[in-house]
Image 1 (cartoon, rainbow, N blue to C red):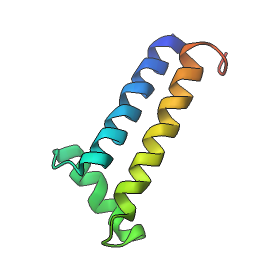
Image 2 (image 1 turned 180 degrees about the vertical axis):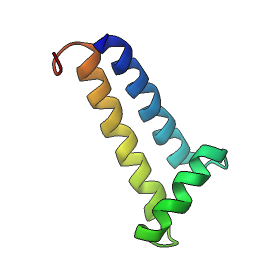
Image 3 (image 1 turned 120 degrees about the vertical axis):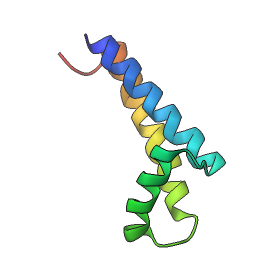
Image 4 (image 1 turned 90 degrees about the horizontal axis):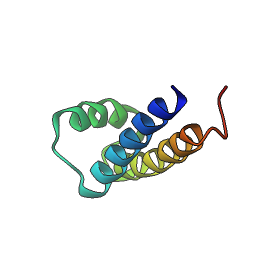
Length: 71
């Protein structure tokens, strides 16, 4: 079951990473951006934040999928 959740986390991380790079107008990403702008302001820091978070989530997903972390 950890492999399934790891793959899901990898996909979410890739989504955040690609959306952050492209500054996507996808509905889910726009909702996340609007909430994050309260903390990060109106600049590009929000997109950089999602690029970094996407990479970190994908790394944790890879570790989870291969059984390095988790039960």
